[in-house]
Length: 363
Image (cartoon, rainbow, N blue to C red; front, side, top):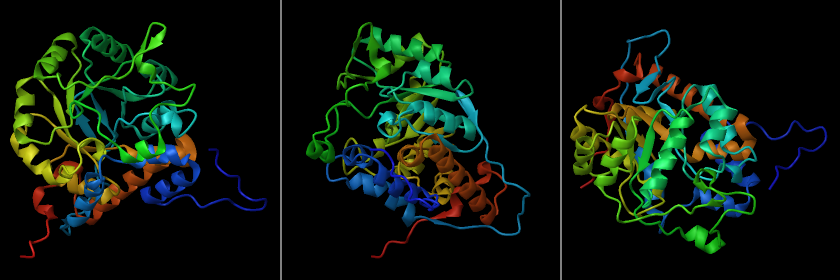
């Protein structure tokens, strides 16, 4: 659905001033079925709501008289560095939000000098994204396929595109039921769009989810590539420790944005347990529910090396293409800088758990 044109003599709608305003602008412009696809979650969407609500329950406890001229935001991770601790999470089907799709997203990430995790279900192939935006810092998100030969083909495509890491999503042995998509009858992409990374000769393979995928498949990945393996979808401390035993370079605490198993915890609520389980042996990242710079600080104070945002970038695309996605990342950068200054912190690495307070139980 194309955006409406401003009336003659009108300056047009004001530029959104927050991530929530970008969502509202995108909702006005997107096909309602496609908006629901991006916005929706699994089941009753309990976890979807919990991700944002959990950040709201946390309070920052600032320090004073510890001034720094300009806070340091940069982070270094396995597979690359970023100018701020906010990465672009893997999300599918960007061409539903903007005709340029993932190319536009990559331009925004490159402008922000941050990392874009390219979804295996992207509507532009990873190689084409890299060719269109040579300066982009890309990682490739992978669902291990039961056909390991084709999985290796996907890995080689990511390597050829210059990706810095493989982000292996492990929370999807089956596809979560999303009521909004069922209600809307949204089960496939419109004509002319497909999951371009899944091309295999003259056909496009479906993405397969398999409950038979095990830790042995992760071990196999570490054998067939030298790219760092970033495991996405870890919520249990025991799994975090097991991941380290299998050569994983980093973890992403993620519940798939509330799109897989409903009623599981908000990611920021389990983050400290995963950080403790890893014990500094590998970076721990987080996605899910980050909507403000203060959310970023809370996650970093609780031990995350960086956060990743998915839906907000799509809202930027839907509202104003690549410019909207750039603006979303600019807004978060400015909010992080401001929050760091107000918390009396000179660098993101200086945040610590004592700067976050949880509410006291009422009983």
